[in-house]
Length: 170
Image (cartoon, rainbow, N blue to C red):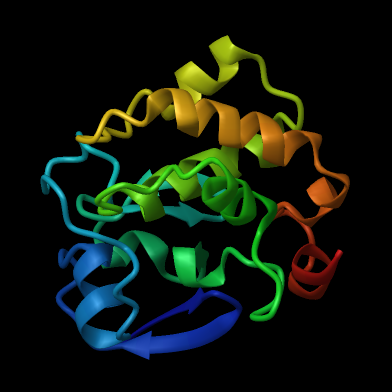
């Protein structure tokens, strides 16, 4: 049995230790917002946070998350009623086209803003380079990240180093 926390809720699973986190999230926990894209950590669709760091869930064995905190797209918003500043900016800039890569894009952007609240274009490009958007919305993604960073509610960005209540409701 393996215990870990997902979106501030403790879970215990009985999985093969080598099973990728992505499939535990989707198949065992029913959290389907994290997408399967390539299976080799190249496209970024499966990006989640592990203790605040953006990782690729498709290649992370479940054994690597024992006792740790995982945040998925379902846990990104500060509260169920209030979207994360990035989610609001994504809508405002009409970033989603097909939408398949968007949960991974948002999770990578949130990890960036948690460590660099005022990123430059170079910072954004570096942080987002592992996320592929087949629709080519890269300029809109950059604009949305800048809009979110400039918002007054930027203090709501997920911070894995803060206690859960503080990071979610800031």
